[in-house]
Image (cartoon, rainbow, N blue to C red; front, side, top):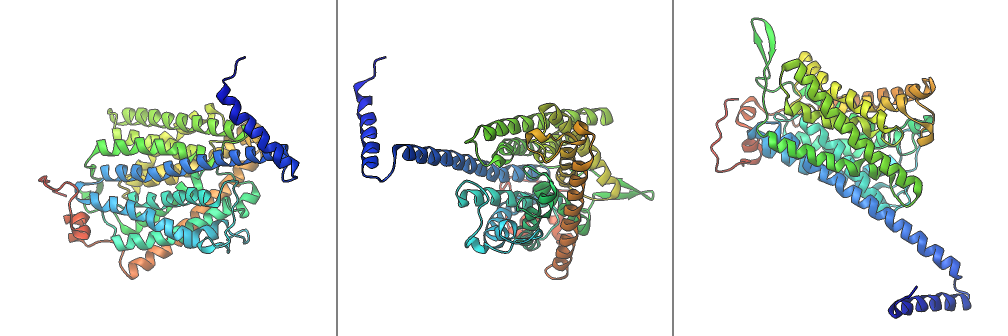
Length: 457
């Protein structure tokens, strides 16, 4: 084979460089090659984690578009402002306090070192700042879930206070139990990318906050002594649709990125399986949600169908690395059903969740975490096979214990926080402010300036 002369020059130079270092005893050629290869592998993993972090950050845009589209025009700026600020507050609080509580040295309940990232622990093989950014994006996602459930009637200062507490304390403590070497991880509890740590945490907090706020004016109307649910449609389904597509795209950083690298064959195989499972579950969630709504109401409601996609994505987030693609389809299909009947259940209970945050994130975070104990496979990295593979209830029991303790901790702790906020700065805007809209009342602006918008609600 002929080799161009220009290629020989760097090859010869490289050989001469390695030979000269070996001659002077500085480093053997084999050691130099091993170092170069090791550095290259770390570089690949670092780029992988950073790109995944960027994708998870981009999910903030998805959350913002979904929530803005599914609420009324008069509150659009308010919900977008909350999506902006919760990520920023989460980043700062996770830097100052949260990372230390989550990954610092401590006991099974809490970490207590690495505050403000001073001498912080790095459990990954990538540079600590890449790992921190990835985890901070997850923290921001957990915080922003609550905005949708409490939309259109929560005071902006109250939202700031809530976000600071969740980002600094509640989310990191739960994360320590599961991802930081805490007591649940030692029991074999498995949550690959956060069905419980991120989504259930945000969903159950949204449930508590929504119940404490009460429903929006006009959501539940008494007619002849009976309570009737009044639909309050969002102002822009196209905007919400765009948001779902952005979230689905971001989830390919959320789930596959949680391998924290692709430099080994095992990592690459896992990342590929996770990506495929993520896509299949979302697709199944959409199809089943659409079919159920079609059968129930004779129409294919787009908003519920879109929530079917998000439900499938949330549900597969915990088991995506340890289940087969076939199991992923089943998990996503059940998630699509859960979100439809979850919305109906909240209506029956008189709970007003404008965007479906509780059914999507709370209920399906719970379902996805339990699914690990049903279809999980030991050969894919789980501590033990799930019920459907082994007939053993152990893994399912561990998963159920984790779901129970996390949900109780999240709801009880935030019930205290919301109560304190209500007694001090106040939790809900006044009736007049709610009727006029939070955009004008809290931000002094309109989402669509120059357009005449008539509001009767």
